[in-house]
Amino acid sequence: MAEKQKILIIDDDENIAELISLYLNKECFDTRIVYDGEEAMVQFREYQPDMLLLDLMLPGMDGYEVCREVRRVSRVPIIMLSAKGEVFDKVLGLELGADDYMMKPFDSKELVARVKAVLRRFNPEQAGGGNPGRTENVQEPNGEYVSYPDLIVNLSNYAVTYLEQNVEMPPKELELFYFLAAHPNQVFTREQLLDHIWGYEYIGDSRTVDVHIKRLREKIKDHELWKLATVWGIGYKFETKVKPLVSRAGRK
Image 1 (cartoon, one colour):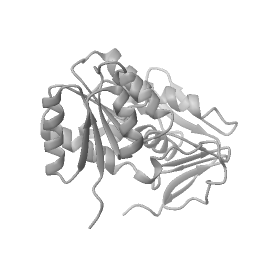
Image 2 (cartoon, helix red, strand yellow):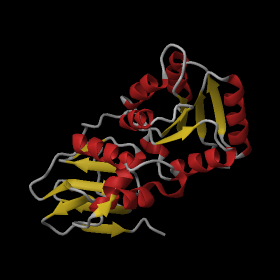
Image 3 (tube, helix red, strand yellow):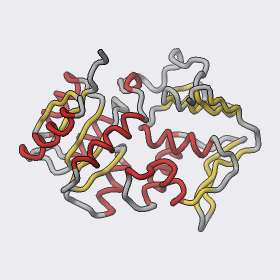
Image 4 (spheres, helix red, strand yellow):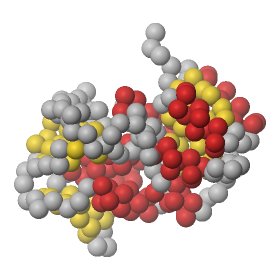
């Protein structure tokens, strides 16, 4: 029997946390609940979850700070939960490394669908801390990937190698990068990218794409043969002077 995936629920509202746990237990997930940020960090190290459901409004160490601390050591998926629906709050959460954002109150079926969707896109084996600068972990690519000079974006194992170094990226960030790199010199609007990467499970505005592009550019600098380019008034493209090596061996 396959081991259950573990989800750490971080919410100071005991009733909501218990309800979320009940929904996820019915779907055969293993859950653990904590009610404040400090304990969340303790349980994150001890429980080693496959995903965090993280409320923003926590006593003491708030959800933003928890997200920032987790992202320093791990790429484990994070879905933020909040009653705050302002665009600023969503953008800040995404900038800190969250993979999705849900507003309270939410439908139980939608929550479960988003949890499953994010986990489908993420390889739990990649969730550990690791040192993104170590080169001995770099291996020959296999599965579904796209490769350019000094760059490999692997969708099968959610790994990015840039200048022979592993680069840590949350799932959505990597998926966006892969999609653009796999369609060289093709311009996509923000709305098209939202549809391709986030799909039905995401209800948000096009600034989400801008946030992820900004984070990608901070990690992956322009290369003499390729770059992430902005097409003003339209959207973005992966601009390149060379033909990529594309493998779809991992696709069923």
